[in-house]
Image (cartoon, rainbow, N blue to C red; front, side, top):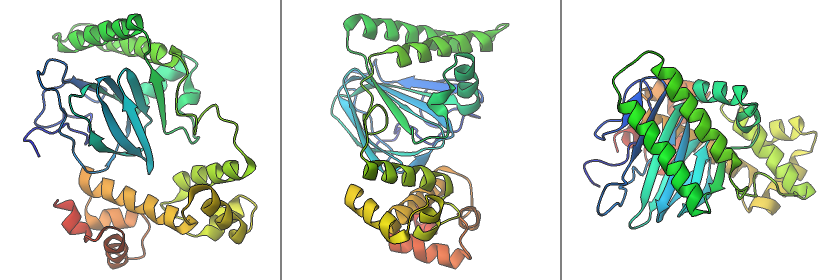
Length: 299
């Protein structure tokens, strides 16, 4: 791994380490590799929990992600927007990838969206990400010019109302993203689901909300007014995985993200995930990953 991997441990109170970024404390940061002759990102392989709204725009090449256990790929002239609260991981980078990364504080993003009447995009629903296609040269050029102007303003010394200027530029950027042709992932938006697919989707919505404290199929079946056997059968038919596998993988993914991208101790993470004891958390984590929590934290 190179000395300066793309920093995906998001902390908007300070700039990401070892990489030059343009940033505004507690509000946003942006970075790109557009000026590199051989632009190949070296990716941090660990899952990261982000409390910011994250955007990745590919101008050449592509990247493969997992977002809350779902595989997502973006390629040339596509933009991926990851919603706050997600655990995401870069699965692989593609040779000669040119990209722009942006992170916006969740509260700042929410305030912008409320003002724009677009809060639904960050509502408590199974909308973990959006993908937009920038499919004309004019649209690419327009978005790139706006990005460069935003980057320039972040580099300016502080001046009166600079924060408001940055906010307005981000608002324009969000409007332009959401106004692009609707080619987003149809498994999340715009698809007519079968009854079984809808049950599975409802299970994932509930799981995403409650997995930190509820880890039995009976709980989710009861909340959905179904029998545990019926819910388990549907989950297996639609996804190819058992319900308990989904639950365990959600817990393990959250644990990995917190171990690697937070300052929380193993005990604090065990408590946050509602394990009866740190030793039980350790056994669970080793079963899921092959590492103890302390070993994984040091990787």
